[in-house]
Every structure is written in structure tokens, then in C-alpha cells.
Image (cartoon, rainbow, N blue to C red; front, side):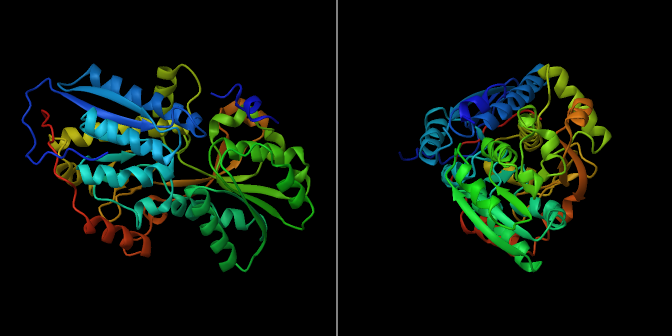
Length: 417
């Protein structure tokens, strides 16, 4: 299947200011920089984030004494482009804080820039674990779950489907992290790695890989990919008849691809889920609210863009300033309702938001028509269990990384509380 056909129908140096934050009168404007993939291989995800971000900004502007402005940048899903755009937003547009969207590789490239400039950054959706481990920075907090949290949620469910696995790995930060974690889990369980293919981002022809898999005795194909590539691989899995002899599983499958997938053939496949509207009354209420505002189906990525932006606005308002040090303090340890069964927490030790994280199974076409959800929740790793202890090797590495470099000094804007 051509990639374009599959897409159809789916939606230089710093000028650092060494001064205390500026005092602003009521009615001040806070300008947020928003950097995401409006083009490139992850632009499908970025587009859903952007809708949620803009909804949250519109809500904030409809009430309150602060005006919230947005200046956007397109990273094209490429680290160097992201670096250039981060420089533009920080040094030329003089944004007060940053929202960053999707690509882990871009996030790893731009968070040191924001740190040096002293600009607080909220990461919406990048999921490479190292962003809350050895590559954590003082000025960056992350909203979405990472591969470590996903593994806690889906690991045992995938193992229950068989212990002979063939991995399909995307050659980027998230894919390699997912592969490292799931292959280690398989090894600890005494399973067998039948094979692993590492493919470039944006692969559209999976015939060679699926032919190789078909000629093995593997019990499960495990997708360590992101974005559209997961959906294309899942479709190829069915097209090559592999669903008749083995199971499919993986770290993530974006819900907005549901109508492009052969659901009946994939039903029962196991993937992690960022969020589900069925998990609590507040989740259902938020889903319905977003649906009315969007005028159509609600994606997990709408949710991520919306709620992460709401949290950034809330914490700036609580701190009364966009000064990075004061914003860090306002986030660290803050508990909040993220529309799940349990409250979420912005952890001080690794700057990760600890959320309930879900294991889901792909539903049949009939059930999808009834509920509108791609996955049924079949397991939950509660927030504290999913995020793990702050004494874990990863959280300890994050604490050391955060403490190792102080944010640069930058003028921060005061806002009325």
C-alpha cells in the first residue's frame, strides 16, 4: 500500500539577559512558543497536538486577566530544523516559555538550548525514556508517558501472548528505546528473540520484513515504532496473512488510524495507551467537552496537547511569573487531575509526570462502531507503579543530570495571580 494512500482519510548564539524578571501590570501578554512537526514524518501526530494546544489557549483567553499568545515553529521532524526553530523562538521571538510536541530526537536536541537560555519547556509527547533520565534538564518537564512506563503497563500482557518474538524496530530514539526495554523484558522471562529488523523512519514497504517473519516460528510480532509507521506495519501484517498464525503487539498505536485498519483481523492485539476516555468520570467528561469543541472524534493526542497546555498555564499563573526557577518550583511535586482514576504528579526527581498508564487490546470493527475507541483497557499500571521509584537508576540519573547544569539567566515576565 502506498504511504500517501494510507494517509488519505486520516486526519546561532544566545542573547542571554542577566536580570530579574520584569514586573508586568494586569492584562499582560504571555507568549508561548510552540514547536512541533507541522510537516515531516510525524506531522500527523503534531496536527492533533496543535488542535489541543489552541483549544486550551482559547479557553484561557476567554477568562482571566492574562492574554496568552502563541508563536509556532515547525521542526519538520528533524533535529537540526528543530534547533534552528528553537533559536528563532527563543532569541528572535523572545517567547516566555516553550511547548514542545512530538519527536524524541528533536526534544533531545532542543532541551539543552532552552536550558542554556533559561526558558522553561513543557514536553507534550516525546516518549524516549532518556528525556527523564540521563538527558533530563532542569528547565524541561514531560507530560506524556515514556517507554519505561509503557513497558510497566503492557509487558506482562505481551508475554502472555507467547515468548517467541520478532521485533520490527524504527531507527529513531523512541523505537530503539522501546526495543531495548521489551527485548530485555523478553530475556528476563526466558523467551526467545527470533529476529529483529531495524527500519528507517517512514518505511512504506514492509514486504521483505513480513516475508522473513512468515518463514519463522515466531509467536508474536512486536512493533517498536511510532506514528504512521505502526499503522502501515500493522496493515502489512494482515495483508501477508500473519494474523492467521501469530499475534501482534507493540508499544503504541495511534487511535486516529482506527478507520484505516482491518480491525477484525487485528482484534486482541496489545498496545499501550496514553489515555482512555473510559477510565474515570472525569475522563468521560473531558472527552465529551473536547468532542464538542472539536466537532468530531477525540484523539489521545488532542488530549495531550490540551491538558499539557492547561497545566503550563496553570503553573505560570500559580508561580506569578515565567521565570524558569520559579516555574520549576511551581511544577515540582504538584498533583493534579489529569482525567484518570488517580491524580497525576509532576515529579521533582526526574521532571516526569507520573500518570496511570494503560494496556489496551484492539477492538473489533463492531465494537469500534459502538464505542469509537480503538482499544479496550485490559490492564492499568497506577501512576506511582508506572513511574517507579525516585531511587531507580533512571530517576537517579535524571536527578544528577538536572543538578549538573543550572538554567541560564533570562528575563521572566510577571503575571497577575
